[in-house]
Length: 103
Image (spheres, rainbow, N blue to C red):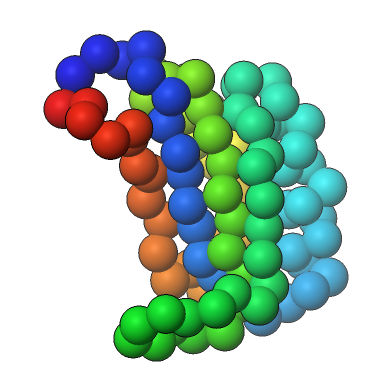
């Protein structure tokens, strides 16, 4: 797989502590931008077509490559900021998608 293909990152989580989550949100966007990430959208009221999942927020991000995503996710600054997400949310799923046809 080429490491230069765009990567989409999807997270779904339930916010349990809104005040602590706001600390995470405030620091999130500058770090995302610093690592070349692009915020695409979020939804607090998704429509379930099949099955079920816990209530919460679904977020979609995009990075220019898997390397850029991993650089953001594993950066010391994001790891420190993420302690606020860990303390304020229950994360149900975090994964990333490659473009169709990529291997």
